[in-house]
Amino acid sequence: MEKEELKIVSVEVINNEVDSAVKAIKDLQDKGKKFL
Image 1 (cartoon, rainbow, N blue to C red):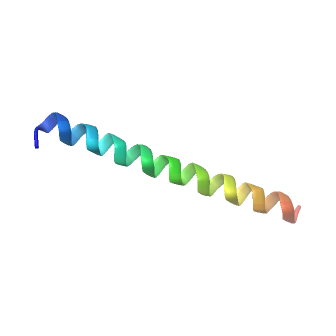
Image 2: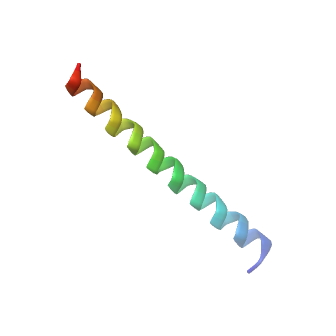
């Protein structure tokens, strides 16, 4: 693999992790609203 390809892959992985974190936070916020 070329260095450029590795950079693109790592960016995609980071974006996926960010998306997962955002979804998790939204889920927690939704659960929190139900408790309040």
